[in-house]
Structures are given as structure tokens and as C-alpha cells.
Length: 147
Image (tube, rainbow, N blue to C red; front, side, top):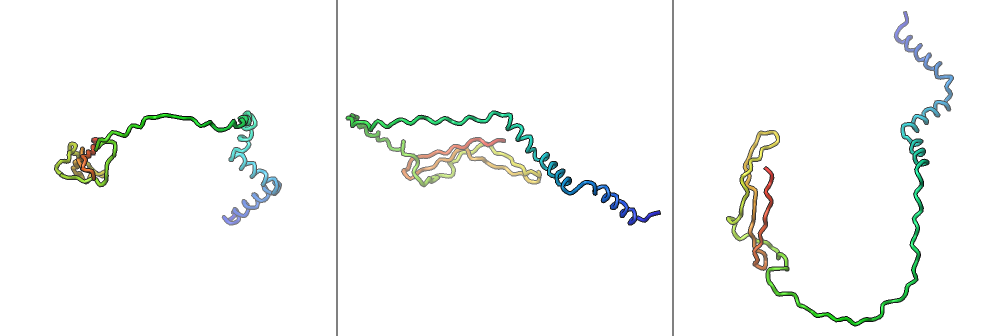
């Protein structure tokens, strides 16, 4: 009975004998063919050969310049902007909240952590009333958060 080492040596010898007829160049060609099949390069080339090539874009013909426009007279009536303080000027920084008690809140929400260990109640802000640098009232209104 042959030992394990002898069996392995016999297997190695058999593999070497089986590979001898296949030359190195042939093995290389087989490997390159396998790589080409994996990449799909031939299929891409075949598809591109079937698809019609895109047409070259035609350019517009050039038009000779005809000169500048002659001077013209125009007429307009100037209308000064309406003087209305507090509109159209935007909000002047800084915004200052005059009274914390004027805040409005949405209904209380109970928020629970993902693991369910902690729950806490929050009061989402609904509206804040502030005053800008021009002493105009500014209201910030917030959307109701989901339950």
C-alpha cells in the first residue's frame, strides 16, 4: 500500500504529464480568451458595429454683421417708489425675541429611543414673535412635526 506522500507524488506526476501536450502559448491564448469573455469586449464591439453611427452635426452658416443700431430717442416717466416703511425692505438683523412667553407650541410629543429604553416629552415650537433692527414685528411660523 502506498503512503500518502507517494500518492500525492503520483497525482503531481499525472497532472504534469497531462499538461505537457498543451504548450505555454496555447495556455496563454486560453487565458486571454477567458478574460475577453469575462469582460464582454467582443459583445460591445458587435453591438457597436450594428448600431448606426451618429451623424456629424451641421454647423449654422455665418451671417455677415450689418452694423450697429442707429441712435434713437426715447421717453419715460420716472415714478419714485412708494414710501411705505416696513414693506419691501426685508428683515433687518438682528432679530430679538422680546418676550419668551409669547412663543406658541404644538401639542406635546413623546419621543422614544430606538432601543426603547428612554422616552421623553418635547414641545415643538409653533411660532416665535421677534423684533428686527427697524423695530418691525417678525413672526417665524414652523410646520407641525410628524407624530
